[in-house]
Length: 233
Image (cartoon, rainbow, N blue to C red):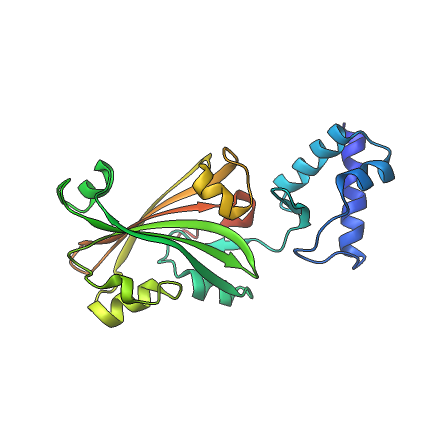
């Protein structure tokens, strides 16, 4: 397997370094690659999966394999602004709203806000993309009574900026928890993955200057599209 993997990696790396394939461009089909390298489809796929783990390529459900762009670098010890950080790293960010609902929420959410089960929340789901590639599905929960008329805002733009402009609310600090897990279908499908695929889950709680919870966010990332950078003193 190691020799086969070396052949796969050398061939695909050569296509990229030689300029035949650029970031987000599609690789030849698995059948073409297997025939060219003289490998079985099973052996080839094992090698492609390893290359995906190294961040060299990525797979889209029912579409094939693509050259991976550079990873998005997140600094979880700092307040995170997706659009600003993406632009600073040379990406073109975009956001698409999948749904916005008003409803009661599960226990861990309403308790995080210090509210009761009877309280209602906005539940906003958006898919965030870099250079046209969907990399993260975000579920955001905000108390209905604190942000009346939220549905009138342009929610595909920066919610952080609009909460400040309309409601005078600014993020003072964040708390985040990072875990690996399996994606549910509702999160996997917008990312082009099968349900049950591995993903990176980031729970992000944002607070104002009075230490009141602004929003409860759960981000579901393509695991090979992101890397963490933490600086200590």
